[in-house]
Structure formats: C-alpha cells, structure tokens
Image (cartoon, rainbow, N blue to C red; front, side):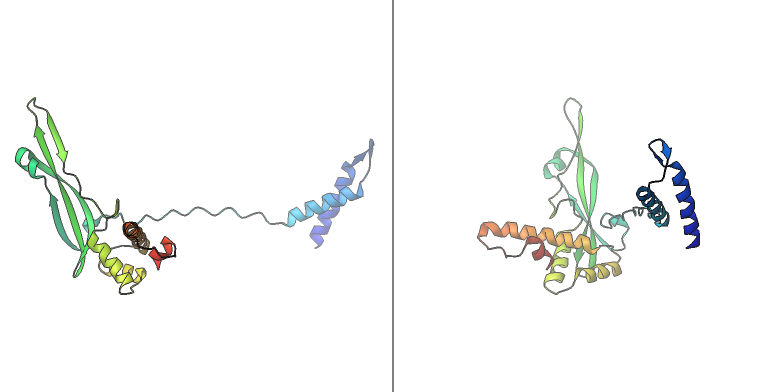
Length: 212
C-alpha cells in the first residue's frame, strides 16, 4: 500500500535521526526494523470493541400482584377460638396464594385475624394469628396447584412449557422456571420422606430425578 510505504519511510528517517550510539548519531538496523514493524503493525490493528453493556435483568413473574388476575377467588379466614372469646378482632392480615380447582386457577386469600387485648393496667396489645405452614417457604403455590402441575407433568406427560402456555390462556403469568423449581423441591421432599422408610433412592442425581 503506497500510503503505508510513505509513512514507513518517514518513520525510518525520523528514527534514524534519534538513535544515538557512543555519543554520536547512528542507526541500529535491528532495533530500527523492529521499531518500524511494531509501529506499522499497531497502526493496522483495529481498536478493541467496547465491552457489551449489561442488560437489565427481567423481574420474575411469580411475585406479581395476584389480586388483579381475572380468576375466581376463595377466602380462608384463620381465627383463634380463645381470642375470639376474650379479645376484640380488629382486622385481618391477608396474603394471596395461587391454587387450582376443577375448571381453572383459583386465588386463595388467607386472612389472619388480628386482635386487640387490653390488660388490667390499660396496656393495649395487638396480636396476629399464626400463619398456617406452606408447602414450600415463601411460595405462592397452594397444594392444589402443586398437585395439578406435578400430575400433568409426570402422569399425563404435559411439559412445563405447555403448562406455561395454558396458564397464560387462563390469565395467569406463571413461567416454566418457577414450576421447575417447585418440581425440584417436591422431589427433595419425597426423597426426604422416603428415607426413613428404608426406600432405596434411584441411582440418578436428585436434579435428574426432578427434571425427568
């Protein structure tokens, strides 16, 4: 390339005037050839591309507001028989689970009663009924929904991605990753319950057993 040859000659003459050897101006051929080749090769190498920007992580769909879903609703009130007789019920602390009943998904509102009690000294105390245990910690799935998902997958051979499409048609956004974690947790629970009974666990790993 003519342009590169002209530029190389100019660099050669400039470097020749700048090389000094024992107090006099001299050219060192080996070092000069290396310097010219290095500078020329660097000029032809394209600049490195900037690192890709981190894409914002999508928010999980499991924690969306279930009260806005267009599905049937069932309310379960958890009361305390002793406090019902001795204290004043003032409110409910509500949480929402996602269940299933014949015909489609179901919103289950679990209402924990809140009571106000007043001691003889006039001190007021507000207490809430203890929440019932859930199948999995911090999970929105009621036992009926877990039974539906696992039965469809392992008994009827319906993959999770098709179940995800079916829930979408029902108006519920429930991704297959969430259902896969539920299935894996269910497999761990079954193995934990079967161990004291002397049952032999399969030779496959727990993850393979849950996802098969």
